[in-house]
Length: 117
Length: 115
Image 1 (cartoon, rainbow over the protein chains, first blue to last red):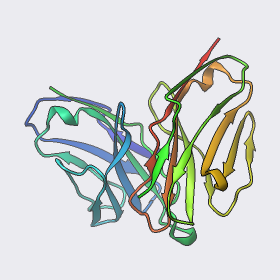
Image 2 (spheres, one colour; image 1 turned 90 degrees about the vertical axis):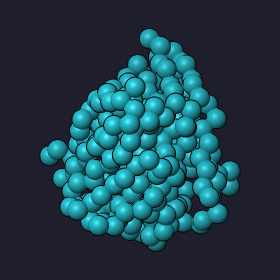
Image 3 (tube, rainbow over the protein chains, first blue to last red; image 1 turned 120 degrees about the horizontal axis):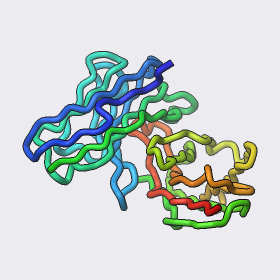
Image 4 (cartoon, one colour; image 1 turned 60 degrees about the vertical axis):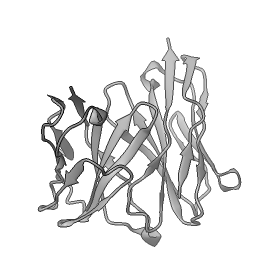
């Protein structure tokens, strides 16, 4: 029972390089999310996906691209990494909204620590 | 727009003391969920509890208890007889109906339990 996994767990890259962070969940949850966590800002939503081939922007989407060709995978790509994208990135998943359309509990992966030099 | 405020950035107590973490939320929606997550030093985010806006009953789970008061828009978390293993950053979060765009998190409270 792997749940939700992220890879790599740690990544160092250079400014201008493309980086892809992977997220995989085994629960068949329809919703998936990417957050970044920074000191002083808490967790902020980057992108989310309601189902395969359906994605939408969150609070801080600039500089990021996502795709969701399969329900279980939700990769996040930094097309041209910048130092300001140094952060800890969390992927999360949840079931479809239930009661009164409320967003269900999100379960988080272990995170990816990204350092952009 | 939604907002979650955790005014206590850091709390330090001695083991076995009781400690309360405050959470105040803002939303115009009448239907919403409130959450608490724990982030231990290892870094993962662990789900602790979810309450919906229809249910103001307090909840107790072992040494943990939660006090939800709509009148003050608060969802406070109390740890009784704290232990060193409770040391972590605790996040309060909010989701609203139709708000498929994720959770709104507070900035977290860093709880330090000293032996």
